[in-house]
Length: 123
Image (cartoon, rainbow, N blue to C red; front, side, top):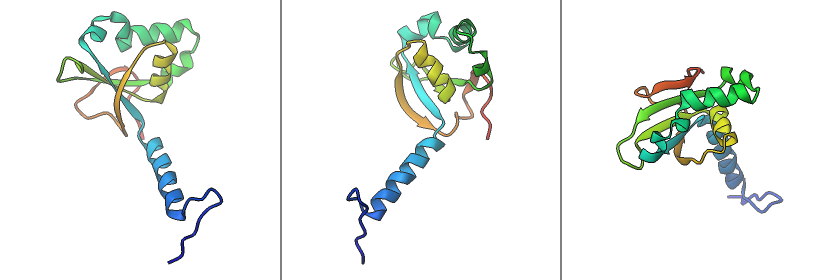
């Protein structure tokens, strides 16, 4: 068996696995954000209230056609609410200066999650 190495010193399989991992990361479109009890109590963490105000006030209304946030009840006090944010929604969240506890990512929100703000996901 040939041990073909790239100029970087990686084998062809290592390069392939790294490329597949990069493609898989693109496939996972929704970040899962966990909000604690205290975060949920802060009205500025509510997607429908804070995001629309921020987007409008910052003159980025075009984002309203791309932002997608779903929510689902969590099961612990550290994860009272789970928010599923697409890339556009997560970018707005960061621009707002919000801290986030990202606990994972997945291709789409679960069927039990409800649209909290923005447009439904599409394929």
